[in-house]
Image (cartoon, rainbow, N blue to C red; front, top):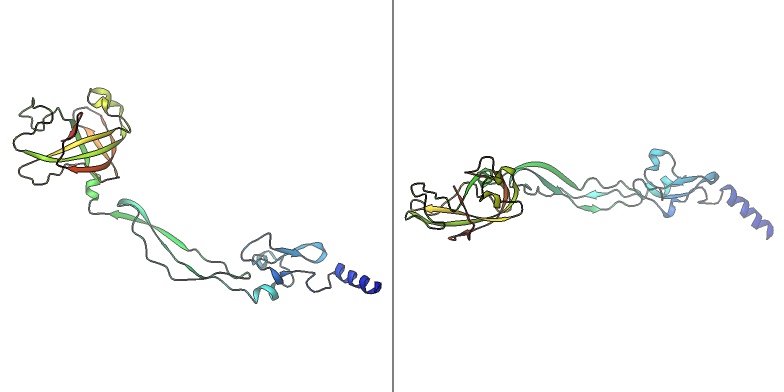
Length: 248
């Protein structure tokens, strides 16, 4: 009995027992995985990941245990491209595909499942987003034949238009030049009126932009006073509370 134990111990020490020089029968890993190893001959590590074929340090039983049972990744067809991420100007599109058969036992890993490419948004309203608004305080008359018109008072030929609500995102230093423009500062919410006339049933004022989009404005009576804002919404048939602004 003692002789059999000694013989078994000698075989285990010299690596003659099955699986002593490599143990990939119970672990096969895709790609590169430094944790996917087994004790090899002469106490050196050998590996059971598919990357070992490149580095030449596979366990002796890697091909028998892993490659024969390997199942490579399989993917389905590409889905359709998404819409452009930007309504106007440079943006990106994306598409994806799904894994139908995941890799097993060291099989080929999955290819890219997502693709992205550039695009140019060309929404019909893009022209509106490129317009620059010209603004004045409501105390200025849009009809300079009547410069003393009271604030908020419509001329006979004018009709109620709409109000635009904007959040100022940039205001240049020259805006400190006049009292009304000094009230413009970053993060302030302003109301700007667009007034129509009897020849236009629905007025449109240049520069009211697109909701959620950053556009630009200039103060018509203050040299160098300009900046940007983001439209938060339009309201039909309203009058802005003071201090109000008007589109020119």
